[in-house]
Amino acid sequence: MIKKQCERSDAFAWDVVDRAPYAVLALSDTDGTPYCVPISPVRRGKAVYFHCAAVGKKLELLKKNPRAALTAVSDWVVDSPEYTMRYSSAVAQGTARIVEDEEEKRRALYWLSERYSRADLDKFDAMMAKYAKAARIVRIDVDEITGKQN
Image (cartoon, rainbow, N blue to C red; front, side):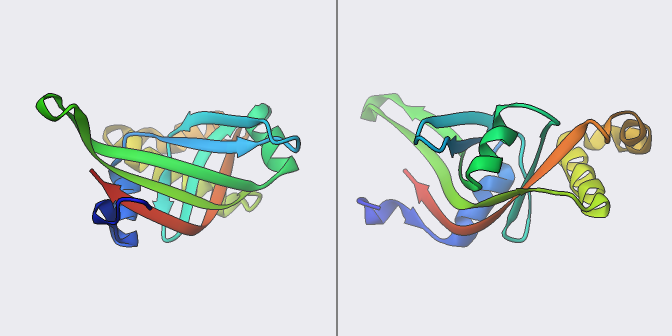
C-alpha cells in the first residue's frame, strides 16, 4: 500500500467485511478478461461464503479459474471541503470452491439468513425446503487480506 498511514490490520479488514452491506467479487476468465459482480457475503474465520444460482457466469468462471478477489467498503462519507471520501475498506484474495457438502451448505445458508434476514429466521426451514436445491454456495478460502482507512 502506498499510503502506509492508511493501512490497517487484518482484524480491521475482517471487521469491514463483516459490516459492509455487500462486497464486490472479482474473477477472471482464462484469457484474462475481468468480471466483477456484487455479492452478499458472510464470513466464518478466514472463509467467505456467498450464494448464487446453479448456473451462470460466476460458476463458469470459478470452474475455469478458482482464484478470486473480494473488496468491501464500510463507513463511507464524502468529505466535500477536502475533496475526498472517508471510508474503511478491505481487499481479500483467495481460492474459491463450490460447497458440495450438504451440511456445510445448510450452515452457510443459515449464516447468510442470519446476517441478511434475521427478523425472518423462523421461516428458514420452509425456505430451505423450497429453494436450497436450486442454490449454490461458494466458499472463498482467503489467503491474503488488507485493510485501509482513509
